[in-house]
Structures are given as structure tokens and as C-alpha cells.
Image (tube, rainbow, N blue to C red):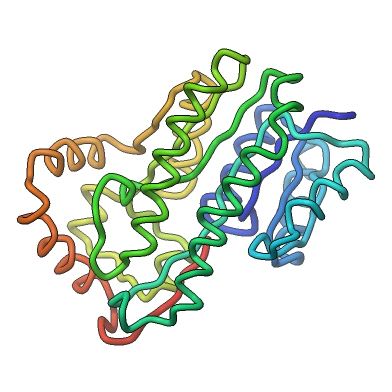
Length: 270
């Protein structure tokens, strides 16, 4: 079985940039997302640099049988993960009580259930290759998020789960890292209806390429948690000093301010 790096949500944004970074460092890739055309274009781009052409698997990881289908496809090709990068996820902007219940449960299915299943499905091959798991969380994981309540809650799970898994698997030679970016100008923000405030962008925002490089470096050094960018690190330090009773209205205002249309729920995906 040939070892590969499996990257989900690789069709755009941080996922695509992570694919470029891993490929540039010599990793053979398997790219997974729903949009096959974008995956194929990225695979051709990587192959044009002289690296092995990534394997492309168009698959909706929200399906309950997606991970078993993915595992079977990898086995049939003689591949097994040495590294799993869980980047796929999405969020909804709007009051939780006003949003579609089914769509909010779908956030949990993708951001929590699928990530958990992918993190655990290939542990034995990760051990064999002394590889690891890179889970893309968010600075949202460190705080409650009125206006994006389920999304923030899902990222809190990703952070907590990843930290615990880091401890459990380290004794078996497997590294686990939670990457926590702040605002990143990608499809996630655009499709969510979030605008890029200039002051916020200057202080907190990094490009997807910057986040990918920071995440790769932290993962390869075996870090448990990587908060991308000094601005976000300072912001989180300050947030921890503010009681939640005072923080909640500030966060709610920030979400509403960043939304183009605060009264209209929007979906975002990454």
C-alpha cells in the first residue's frame, strides 16, 4: 500500500492551498471534495510542477457512507493515508432559532461527524507511517458565537477532540494538530455573506496561502494547536480575559456587522 496525504475540502480556499504546500514538500496527495472539475484543475496544476499528479475523488462527505466509500476507493488503488487533513466544513450566518434545523444538523454532520470518522478510520495506517492528522478548526473554537452558534460550537468540538487525540496518539508516534485560522478571504466568507472589514483584515486576516504554510509548519513540528497569525494570537489572549457575559454581545454585534444582510441566513462552505 502506497502512503498518501488525504486532504478534504481541497477544491478551493485553505484546502487547495494546503494541497499546494503538501505537494511542494513531496507528499503524494489524494484530493477530496464535491466539485470534481476544480479538483482536476488543481491536480493538473500540481502535476505541472513536476510533482506526482494527485488522485482526485469527487465525494460528498456529508453522506453517511462517505468514509467507507472513500476507504474502499483508496484500497482499490493500493493507497493508504499516512496523513489526513480534515479541512472540509461549512457554516450558517443567522440566529439559530431562525435557521433551517436540517441545515444546522448538516453542519454537525460535516464539521463534527465526518471529521471524527475520518480522524479515526485510518489510525492504523497513520501509525505504520508515523504520520498524523491536521484538523482545520478556527479561532471561533475558543469562544461562543451568537449569529453563528452551531458553527462556533462545531469548531469548539474540533479543537477539543484534536487536543485529546493529540495526547492519545502521540505515544503511538502519530501527531495531531488543530489549525485555528481567523478571518480568511475565501469562498467561505463570500458565500456566507460576510464582508471583509478593512480594520479587521489588517489586524487579523491572513491569506489562505499564509494559513496553509503556517499550518503545515506547525503540523510537521508536532504542535498540538496552531493559531495562525500574531494578530489572532493577541486577540485570543485578550478574549480569554473578558467574561462571557460581556463578550457575548460584542461577538454578536461583530457577526451582524460583518454580514451583508444580517436578517437573511446564508450558508458558507469550505
